[in-house]
Image (cartoon, rainbow, N blue to C red; front, side, top):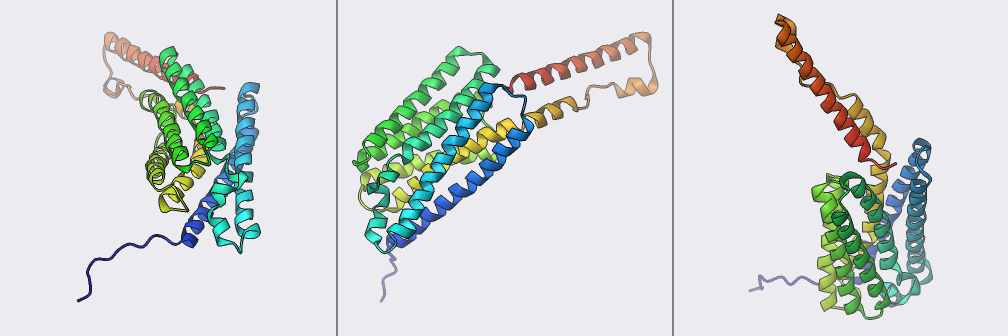
Length: 297
């Protein structure tokens, strides 16, 4: 009688390499999205301060360097080392071009996080929350540096990489939950999901720290895409400021006394309706000012 137990075989190395190729292709796609966002920012936000333009230029430079590194890895994998499967398998462990992968991505994330800390300060003016977030982000990029330094020791490097993501997520919590500085919705959920997946898979890889394993590939895919998701979030925030202002300016009043306007009333009723409308207009103005103040220029 055949056994009913089916043991799952480990994924072949060629499949894992194919997954890495898909991740690098996704990175190139996200860079194309960012190029479109950079072009849109250049055409629409000409009146921004020189400091904000410098932040965007720095983000464009960092993301481009990340993409150049991905293209170099693809070239080594598919051209230089095409006939050597063992060398391709160890590409992300041996070749010098793969060593700065984590610290380069962490630099992009840190750059974006400092931008969101700036927005958090504009919104809250709470020195304690902003200082706590900056401290967490500082520890995060320091942990990424340690992980890069210990790159040859795969087990310790994976632990420090998970530490980096843990600090980064803790720093995001105040701005995301309390003041909604990060973009809400699917994009923010995607960033959180990728961070958690990288932490979990990194811990699995720390226990099996040799060769090309499925947990390590999952962690590498998440680490490759996470910086670009952060960059897309930052550029989306910058490029939607005018839409937010337009929506606030054209919002119709909602506190009109329709019954009084239709049936008429005493002088006191009319004054009360006028006062109610004035109160609504004042509230609307405050909302507009708040929205505009929350958007850095």
